[in-house]
Image (cartoon, rainbow, N blue to C red):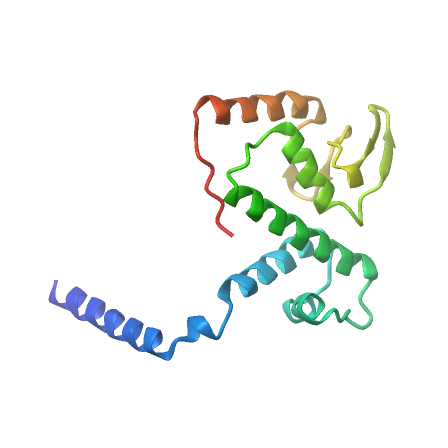
Length: 169
């Protein structure tokens, strides 16, 4: 027990030192967290931008030499969608199927397109939900036939439970 008390005392001292340096006033941790989140999220979709590339793009409007424009657009669209989601969360906006569609449209604004499949035509840049299956190595995704029902059931459940949604970005 005494060893734990020493550890906690040391942590408290280091915290005091950190706070005295006022680094939180110098470094915008939320911004860098968002940039990191965007960089890694778009990397899953194939973007080759690094965190530094993303920072230069967002802070200075500089594109990364030799990197595809679509990767820059993907990152920019995702940033705009996060900022939109954060503002809507602060306003306590009701989550609905139309809200999710609006959010989808922001995510896919510059990189989405009209897709013709056996199930019909949809435009991902307009936020339309997919009408086709999705595959990725070692991953299984919900069948598109279940999406409409699940979207409605999920939003109805959230409203019926009167749950406050807490977004952490």
